[in-house]
Image 1 (tube, one colour):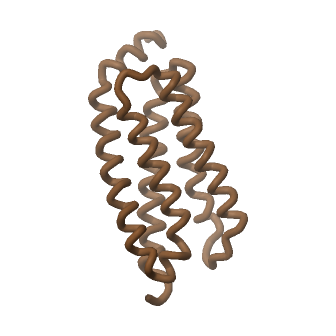
Image 2: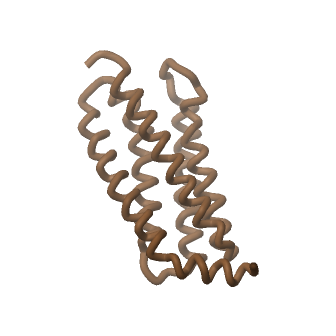
Image 3: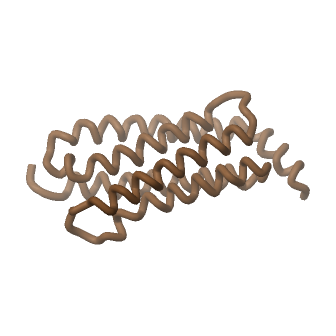
Length: 158
């Protein structure tokens, strides 16, 4: 199957990708609200900023996917920029974080950032697998967000 046929197949299933984008937008928005409510707890102030950055990035990525009538190159560029932004913020947060617990947990959002960057680059080069990478990155991001939310709820007093 040629690349052009694969791209046309993906364009034909745009409703499917928009449904995924809508679902993740709603999930991210609800979780952002929950994180903001949890900010009143000490553990919320400790874990909340990193979780909030991750969820807002997922929300923005989902909303970008929902944009109608934009080219794959523009979509790929926007997704790549979001992934790079998340990667930079994650590195800065991991370098300045003084929380106790396993350090590998601080690097988990990098999986999402890398997936968004790779998916965006693949879309920019007219590869239909870019949407799959973006979907996987968003799914991993939501799983990491749930893990961080659980750590926020179960750690510390208050």
